[in-house]
Each structure stands twice: as structure tokens, then as C-alpha cells.
Length: 359
Ligand SMILES: *Cc1c(COP(=O)(O)O)cnc(C)c1O
Image 1 (cartoon, rainbow, N blue to C red):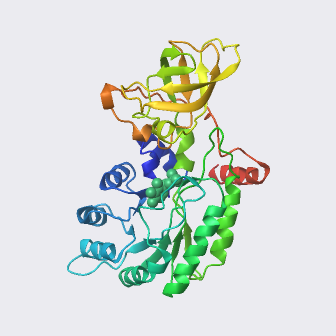
Image 2: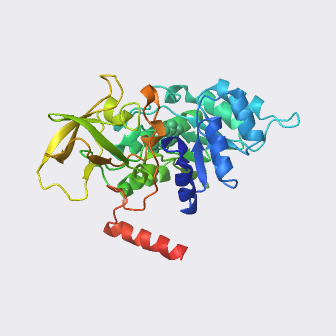
Image 3: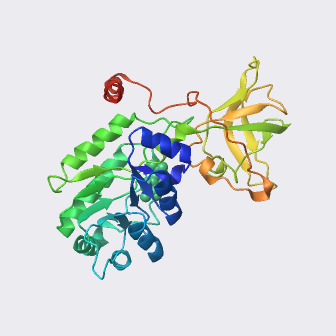
């Protein structure tokens, strides 16, 4: 499934649907309504472990959502109560228990807030098993997992939780966290991640017909968007640009994330590239992006810069703080500035077979 949080652009969601993605991970009632409005036939999974009762009820009764995640017995009870139909408990629920796993290999942690620990998981799994038609275990290794080992380690915890609880598991959901490509972040090809996951899945004590799910956000959306910013002032090696920490560049400001950059000029600059930092447009000192962003030495006021790979957690996080953030959106069909999906020899076959299947 596609994790809508990473980028809820309707155009992207339709593009993914047209590319064969039929299932969507939604985390709020607004995301449920958005995707249902765009894609009446999509399968929606409500994968936020803590949901308002009225959101569960609307998702189930109005929008046909049948899959919910949770990490406590309280949440099982909440889901059961909110989905009662004609005085009877729902008989068609898929409940995924979110397990707490390490974020040690990830650039962005998702380890502290959600998930039940392996040692406390048995009562939650038992309560969910009682209420569910299908029972799943889900986890999230953190976003931009830099090593396939993250999934191997998490699957070992899944195994321990299943053995401890002695329940039948129908779904194993390995979550998101699949990496995209950014300057200075070298990762193994996705195939290596999939190999580790498949090997671990084969070894799990789950039902013969158990399904393996994942819910990537970043890996499916990072390449989808760039922003084009203008240089408003230059102070030595710092450029004042018109987007920043409160706009599409939250991660560049707050966790020093580096994105690819390119000077956009009719005639390319012939000067050599130097490292630059950026200030965003608001009046806050915090609106600063260390970089380094490599740009030609003669970059100047009035120049435009393309900042790429902002399809995930970039455009989705813009605010209008301080009166900024009202950009124009333009649809372009050029290649992304970088891609996880470079066609290496093993995956060339996959790409070819997908093309053949489509045609
Ligand atoms: C954020 C999130 C995702 C997507 O994570 P990526 O790192 O973007 O792949 C998937 N599932 C859940 C529950 C999430 O919170």
C-alpha cells in the first residue's frame, strides 16, 4: 500500500493507482475522505494506532474501511465498539497489532511513540484475535532505513511476539521506511531489502496462506516533486531563498537533510561548484538549512535553483507561516533528479515483464 502521509497530492495518488497500486495506508479521517473521493474502488487501511472513535465509525460505516492498526487492548475495544452493526460486532475486521521495533538504522525514528513491546504484546494479540476476522502484526523501522538489516532485526521481534502469544497470524506488515536517494546517503538496492524480508517471512510461524504487506511512503513519492526557489540575497556562502523550514524544506532545516540542487539558467554557469547554506524567507533564525548544497560559485540574486527529491515529506509539509508558502504548482514530465529505480541488470527483467504485462 502507499502511505498517503508522505504526499497526498491527488495527481500522485491517481498516478499510483494507474500504476497498479490499489491499497492505501491512511492515518486520519481527512486522508480516508480524500482517497475515497479520488478512488472509489481503492482498499483503505487505517494504520494510525490511536484513532478517535468517530473517525473509526465513519471510516467503517461510510467509507468501507475494514483494516485498522492498534497497539493496545483499549484500542481493540474502541474499534469493536465503533464498528458494531445492527447491534452485532463486526465480523469482517482485519486488525494489525503494531509492534515496537528499533529505529537504529533509520534517519528518522518512529520507535518511541507507537507500538507495543514484544514482552507486552501477548494480551493485545489475544484481544485482537478475538475481535478480528484476520489478525496481523505490523511495525515501522523508521523512515529512510539505511540498512536492510533493520527489517531482519524487526522480523526477529515479530517471530518472538508470535511464539510468546501462540496466536495464528494472517498478515505480516513490514511498514514503510524503504529509502530513497539523497546526496550523502548511500543505501543498498531495494532488492536487497526485499530479499532480507522474504527470507525472514519464510521462517515465521504463520499460517500457510499468510500475506506479506508493506506500506512505503517515501520510496513511492520522493522522486515525484522538486521545488524551484529564487535567490533573494547572497551573503558570502549563504543564500537567502524563498522557501525553507516552514515550507517544503522542514527536513533540510531540522535534521540537516541534504537534497540535490541545480542552478536553473538559460546558459549554464561555467564556474566551479562550491558548498552553500540557505536561509528561508521567514524572520526566524531557525529557518536555516546547513546543507552543504553544491552550486556554481557565481550564483547570484535573481537566480533560480531546483531543489529535488521533495515529493516525500516536502510539499506535504508546507505552511503559510509569516505569509510565505504560496507557490505555483506546475506539472512537468522530466526525469527526477535522482532515482531509486535505476535499472540494474536483475531488475531490468522485472521492468520488462511489467511493461509486457501492461502492453
Ligand atoms: C509514515 C508511515 C509510513 C511511511 O513511511 P516511509 O518511511 O515514508 O516509507 C508507513 N506506515 C506508517 C504507519 C507510517 O506512520
